[in-house]
Image 1 (cartoon, helix red, strand yellow):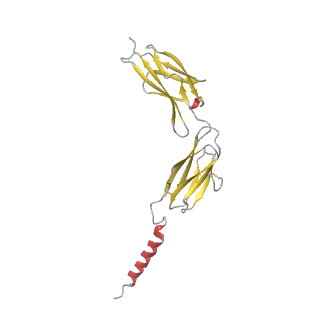
Image 2: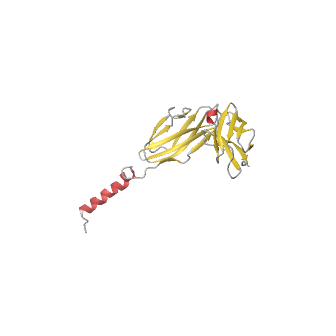
Image 3: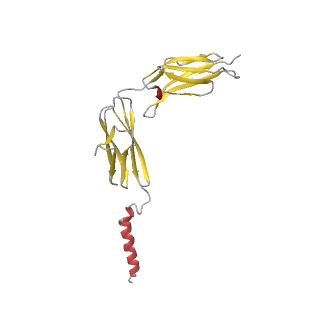
Length: 217
């Protein structure tokens, strides 16, 4: 028995689409683009690093502004256009004579994006350390000064208390000044004042000032 010609043409058309075009982005709504290792850490000397990729589309790789010390090894630029078949990208970093730093790289394609991080150690290690970490404040309040040891600029120092009772906190020329309000409440105060900084690696470093203040009798 002969099969109708229209049936045979249907099989041929289905086979053609299944074996070729189906794998192209036109027939595949799932866009794959990313790296198996989202973050790498390198030492302070001039160095290279590599990210392993998964992709089924052409894409662009870009070093985010502010990371000028980081370039793609292939072309020495902060931009790299890649075919879907690419399975890795390599970057080169200059020597870091300062604090640890972090560069950001984005992978971008239509319908998909990913973010990668390059952490580079530095020759300097940031620190924020109070010489005294306990304060017994007078019930009537007052002004108290502490020596803060740090190698960071004043603009990078932050403070945060876990309850009310502190009127102001300022930092200038290695001196942390804390102004306490009178404790006219019903209970004694036990305040933790966090003195800290956030590094480029997005890590928190610092000290905690433990403040005890009895209520006014």
